[in-house]
Every structure is written in structure tokens, then in C-alpha cells.
Image (cartoon, rainbow, N blue to C red; front, side, top):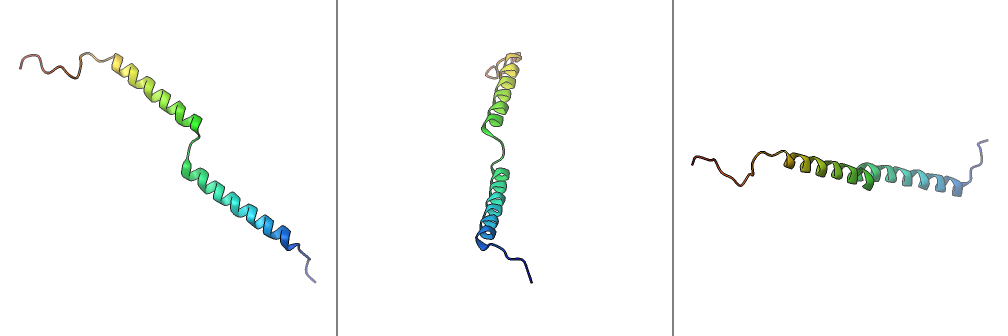
Length: 66
């Protein structure tokens, strides 16, 4: 004779497993956290400011002899 199982408990466990799979897919789809995105953006901004500070001449100036 087989084991007796509680169908409500089985259904709830199945629903939890499906919900966890969906959550994992959403985490993979939406990627990084807000803090991680802000950290990367601050670093890009810092690099841009640093690069602009090292320019020798303005991009608006044309060649000097023409």
C-alpha cells in the first residue's frame, strides 16, 4: 500500500516552487540592483569629468591654419 499524502500540502509546495522559478527568471531578466546601477553610473560620470579635464583644446576650435 502506498503512502498517504496531503493534497493541499502538495499543491502549496508546487505553487511555491513555481513562484520561486518565476522569481528567479525575473531576477535574471531585470539584472542588477539599483545600488549597483548607481555605482556604475557614478564611476562613468567620474571618468567623463576626468577625461574632459585632460583635453588640450576645445572641440569647437578648428584647425589653426585654415
